[in-house]
Image (cartoon, rainbow, N blue to C red; front, side, top):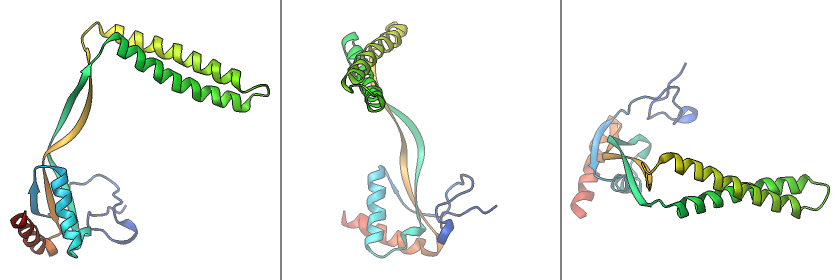
Length: 168
């Protein structure tokens, strides 16, 4: 079995048999992924061998951002919309394969999907009993982002990123 390194070339580039920890020497550390991306872009613009570079998110954390308050109206509206889309899809499929008119299966699918979406949303939200009356999104982010380079080009990369930091 062959395991590619982060610095593999040819057919095995980027193909790992098993997850492996990153290797390389640190040439920069940034507070956001965007800053790390900008640093690698700078390296690429200046003919640095970016195939030797890895961006590593360090100190991972899960961030949940609250997007708003949930109410019965909002929950039922979202359930109805979701059910309607699914019902429309099923209705279109049935209408496509039906020998009679196509409109009846589409309308039936739309109405049925809406009703099932409403019912499902009501059951799920009602079962919560007010324990979670807010909507949110969850992201996996890192506390910092390190840029690593293959040892053969690390010193040059570090110099280039230091020069970039002085210009900023």
